[in-house]
Image 1 (cartoon, helix red, strand yellow):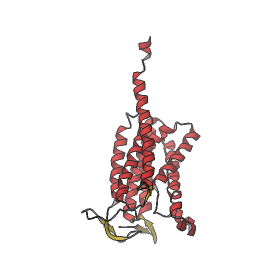
Image 2 (cartoon, rainbow, N blue to C red):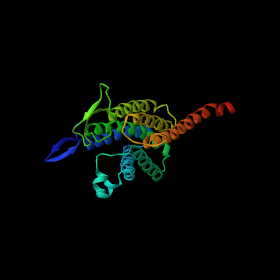
Image 3 (tube, rainbow, N blue to C red):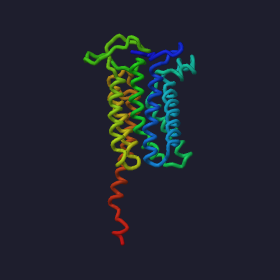
Image 4 (cartoon, rainbow, N blue to C red):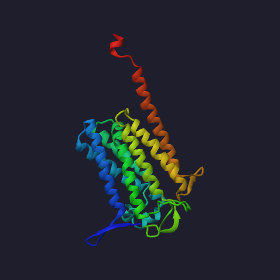
Length: 259
C-alpha cells in the first residue's frame, strides 16, 4: 500500500487526493464530451461537474457524521478534510441535489443533466477506488483464503490479515458500468442512462457489501445495502418510464398518416 504517493518540497501528497483529482479530470472529460454532443458547450460542462463534485464531496462527508460523531466533535475541520471514511450514498445524494439546483438555475431539464453526468460518476468512482486501495483506508473486506486476497500492513487502517480487496472489486465493476453507459448514450431516451446507473451502481455495491466489514443495520442488511435497494427501485422506475415513453412515441401516428 502507498498512502502517501509522493512528496513535493517536504509536503506529503496522499494517494487518495491524487486519485480524487484524477477522477475529477476524467469526469470533466466525459461530461464535456456529452455537453458538446448535446450542444451545451464546454463552460456549462465545467459548471455541472463543479456542482456535482462539491455536492458529492459534502454529502459523502456529512452522511458519515452520525456514525463517527466523536471523531467529528474532536476536530470538525480535520474530519471533513480527511481522505478516508466516505459514504458513497451520501455522495450520490449530495451530488444529485447539487446538479438539481444547477439545472433549476439554468432552466435545463434535470433528467438531461443527470444522463450526462451518470457515466462520469461511474468512471470517477472507479478511479477513486484506486485511491482507497492505495491508501488502505479500511474499505477492504473480510478475511479470505482466496488467492487474490491482500493485506494492508501500511494502510491508513492497517491489517496484516489477507482480506478481500473490495476497492478493486468496485473499481472493476464501475469500469464495466461506465463502458455500458457510454455505449448506450446515443440511443437512450431521456432518463434511461441515469436510471440504468441507479440500477447497476447500487446493485454492484449491494453485492460487494457481502464481503465488506460493515455491520448489519436492518433485516440483516448493511446501511449501504438498504440504500442500494431504494436507489435500485428509483432507477428501475426511471428506466421503465423512459422506455415506456419510447414505446408510446413509436405507437403514435405520424402527421402524414393522420392526413
